[in-house]
Image 1: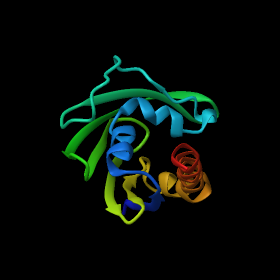
Image 2: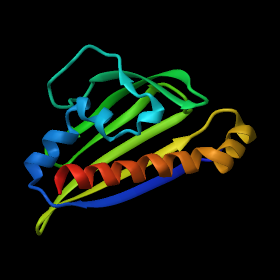
Image 3: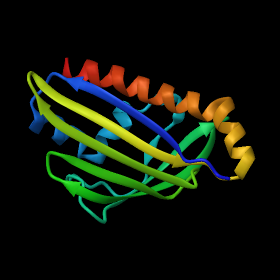
Length: 153
């Protein structure tokens, strides 16, 4: 039986919702909040528009032993100022469904990331999850949390 894993993180950002939405809804900001050791690079043509349904974004990333992997995500759902969803179309996961939710709260924005994911290779994928994938994802999201705190105060 293949396992679907869940990663969920919530962060308070002391900034107005339009400013937070502008940053996160522009794919070019993603490189700023990704650890440099992953060698993340957007390979799709530059696009200064905010995310929109049907948008495809391609990347290279090196999550394991410096081996570069291609990753393609599609933005499947967007509600301006509230949420957007990206889903992997090509990449290291068998399933990657990432929801980005934004909610205005007193003094700023509450941002919640919810990621459902599944690894390939059955029991080997589950073992890899236990040994390093879960830890690596937790590290990436902890890094993002710190960088977002620095960017928004």
